[in-house]
Structure formats: structure tokens, C-alpha cells
Length: 270
Image (cartoon, rainbow, N blue to C red; front, top):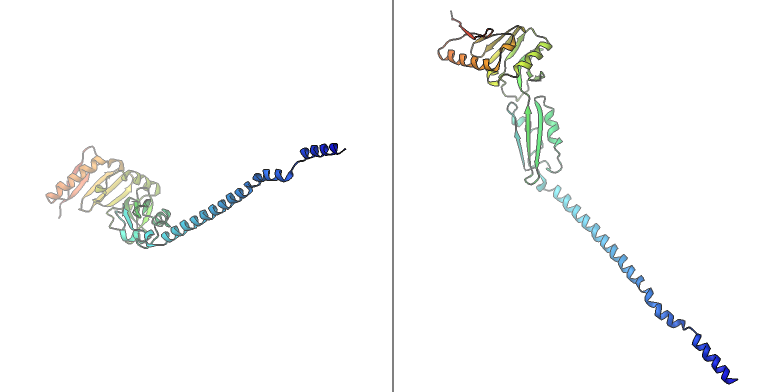
């Protein structure tokens, strides 16, 4: 009976599982939890460093944009032949005062386009030298006219422009006589094709009607044009030669271009 009891105990011992050893064997499975915690902590630290870097960069940019190194260094203006440069610059951001990076191209374009004499504005910004190049296109004057006792100027598109202060002398002729808006537009469409150096010789364009146009020069010559289509670019050059030739010999007169050939008639002072 004792032998059987011992055998049964031995068999029982062999089949008993030692859970304490099993726990020790599985203990390595719980260790990665600590590694995951370290990764999470690393991500938090990395996020903090990133936020601090952004704040540092933002502060640096803010300080730079509000320092003297962000001011407009140079402002260049081109294209002004009739308008006074100082009058134009008064409308623009100032050198050494305006912030180069905070001013946009609109800050240069919009104030200038308020001037009716300025047709177009182009702006180029050089970020390396903090310089701005402003190029304007002025309207081309063709005639002077008197409206309501005020002298106004008509450009090559038929716009009526004011005689602004600060405007350099505009050597274009007065247009007088009988003409409505339609006739004026027709005259503008033809005269704008003529060279400026010819228009500068004229003091007056007298219109009896569209078939009877007279030109008066600043040197005392009268040009009988007839219909305005008689006045071509080629004929303007011939007229200039005649005027210069007659001036050299001390003569003044009437230049008639209504026919095929140009005729000069001297005016005798009497």
C-alpha cells in the first residue's frame, strides 16, 4: 500500500505545472511596455522642440520685418516726360521710411493711376537690393482746347485731360473752330499718326469744317490743308523742309498742300 501511494505521488508531481516558473518565462513579454512609453516621451519632446523652433523663426522674421533692414532702399522712376518727377514721388512710398516687404505693387500702382495723365504703371521689386523700379506710360497730348474758360488737353485717344500743376510745357496746338465730338474723334484718329516733331511746330489748328482745315505754325506760317487726309507723314516732312528753307532766307508765307504739288506763297509785309 505504501508503494502505490509513493508512485501516485510521483506521477502527480510530474503532472504538476509550476506557474511561478511560467511567470518568470513570460516576464519578457511585459518589458516592451516600458519601451513604448519612451517612444511616446520622445515624440512629446520632439513636438516641443518643433514648436519652439517655429516660435524662434517667427520671432526672428518679426524682428527683421520691423527693423531698418526691411526699409525701402531705392526707388527709381522712369517714363515721365511731361509730369514732374517730384510730384509723382510724393504719391509713392518713401525711401528709408516705407517697409519694402509690407508694401505691395498695388501701393505703387493705385496712387499713380489716380492721375489722369498716367495711362499705365509697371512695377518691379528687387528683393536682394530692396529696390523698386516704377515705369509709367504717360498719355500722349495732341491738342489744347478751351472748355469753360479753362485750358484742357486732348490726348491721342480723345480723352480730355486737365492742365495739371507740375506739368511741363506741352507744345501742342490749340484746336478751334466748328467741330462736334464725332468730327473731333475723326481728327484725333488721323493726327495721332503724325510725328510729334511736326505737331510741336504748330500753334493752332483751325477747323472751318472737315473739308477746310488750316494749320498755323509758331514761326508764322499758314498751312492750307483742305481735308485732313491730305496731311500725310511724307507731306509733313516736306512741309518742315519748306519752313526751314524759307526761314533761312527770312520769308514767311502760306503753304498749300491741297493739290498734288505743294505750293508756297510768300506773304509780303506791308
